[in-house]
Length: 232
Image (tube, rainbow, N blue to C red):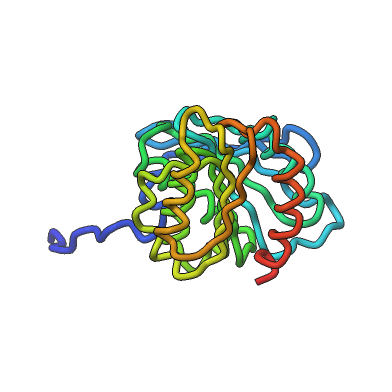
């Protein structure tokens, strides 16, 4: 006898991805290459894990790139440095390569799935970071996965897609933007902060879209800001 029951909506981001298969391989101690195969493309995650003997901190970082994708982040590979440093401290770091870069809905789902992967391995608090287009992804994922996402960091963020930022409801928000950005004007991050109604905007004098002159400034401020947010 046929059932009248119809499948309900996806319950989690991984459900919504329609995962066909997953596999990973260890590239180096503490670094895994994780692949998620879906009908709409391949989601890739570079996953920095705590080394043997280091107790996991119950938190994680999830990092995403801009409209062209990418895994290195701004400032000459900031995401690699974050992965190596915070992974060694017991905080897993997941660097996301989108299935379809520049597709906002698809990219948000990819990053939300990475947050779910982190939570599935014990993270209770996640900070999401995004560069340029990825700033909008980070904001939207933080709104959609509240309260799993404990904070948001954006680098040279666009404002398009951040219209929901008011729903962060005071969640920690840190924005960086160069005042000589040749692609996305500084005023874009000002708009995101205004929409959120809170947050800290760090102006980077003389720097452009990739923030190549400001690596030390970014690092120092993140070293001050992240511990409290990750600790809850």
